Length: 218
Image (tube, rainbow, N blue to C red; front, side, top):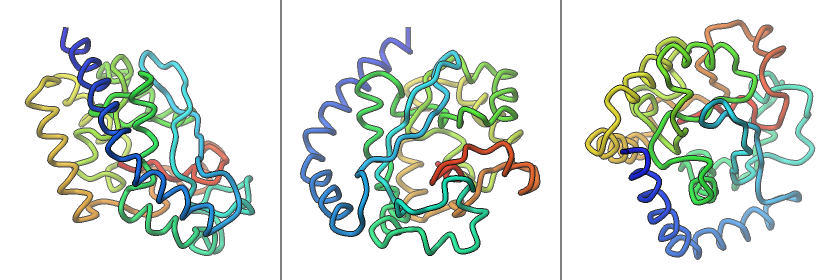
């Protein structure tokens, strides 16, 4: 029953958000286009409810000539590929704003476990143990206010499982306001961090080979 209520709330809040934040969207779109060549939005394949796939949306933060065959954290000079506007977007988490569209169409919820990359098999498997893959992924969740990039895969899955177990209005309220504090303090954000305990060599084989494949943040 609460999942149905969450969907109604998500639809209402995302609709209001798109209207109120439309001037912000316009400013960011213009800034991205003026700063570098390429599309405004970046799409990335993620895991949704019941392990279905969808394309998560973000504002593009990297140059279009970024090598496509290597995750960003394995590049020789990753900072050199991040645009000026992109650096600001990442620091302020504004690159995540387009996910309001994902919420509006039903791919995501405002609060919930962050959607895993399609090939983060270890995280997906760990989440199966706690029923995490059976709820809608979110823009932010319990794990994101408890460490974000600094949390290993196993710990992240447990925190996501705790959210599923305690899911309700009060838990969502705590996650919402906890996220605001985390973003303001930039807690636990590591550029290039995946929360994975495997070596870079193993990650290079398994991580999605795209311009922001490392960016499993918040």
